[in-house]
Image (cartoon, rainbow, N blue to C red; front, side):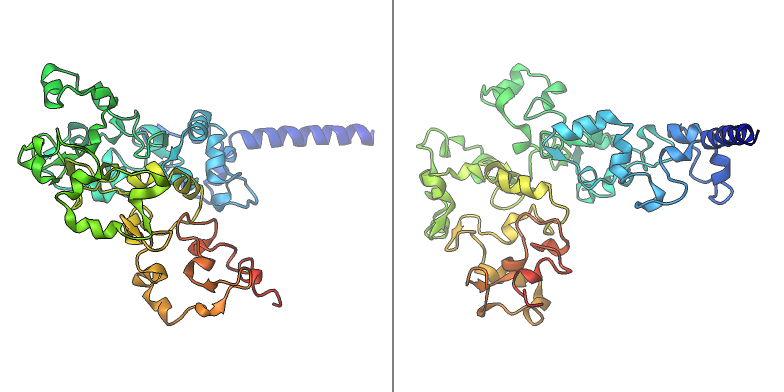
Length: 391
């Protein structure tokens, strides 16, 4: 008899537990004010009143009592996004950091995709540099439709474009006889429209980039075209640049080949002096893909990692990393560490290799690392004990 009553009691407890976990949102709202849970679009678990799909009611290792790390939790339902992230080469920064909530609201929103803000207002929260007051603007940019050209999560293009090269542009800008004539009959499918055109806006109707090569601006194409190509053509006018290549490590002779100036410089237009693009990291990535690939997988990167010329000489230097002023380049930004720093130089030799210590002994400034301040090991202990073993 006692056994029968025990079984009935367990069965009753199971039924109560089953029903209490199915629609328990009202219990949560006894403590958690029911704000932010209404909108034109409601997250399915919220609509079902089941908070435990995402949250643990008791304890968790994650903020907000999430059942898993934020991105892992989202991917458990949104498998199509997880598959895209897995396959593509370049990830949007919030995606790479596993912070879906940087763009999406978890409970409800007034727009599709549970986006935190509408249209381009969301993108401008991070990409404020694109909010230039252009005289002429590209139609999608003018309408705040960033997603016409860009994918939000991942892409095989570093600019997160939906298609590579000119194929994206040709979806709207159809090939006409006039367009072919303007581009001297070149196959538009192999050109990169963005090398000459700003996709957001510009000072003139064709949205050409702001800095023009003088022969191009003067429409004197024959100055360069029809002449023997190569660096000799460029140095014929830019004689002042010759000395910058006459160093131990020159970009012109990397790998025993004569790199053309046009590998880095656009011969027609650019975003800034030197006919370089605003995002110079794209140029460097084309050759140093392995360095950028390692950087993309790190949690902590050097600030302004896309401005390679902040630290490196573009043409060449006497050190193999082509650093400006050798290791002193770090002190240009990190000035206080001139006085307060670990001993460096000939007076402090690295016991692991006997070489003088410098900033790069402890910091991985190029690719970043998994540790804060892009240290080469855990700052709490892991890095220091590599040398200070007695401690």
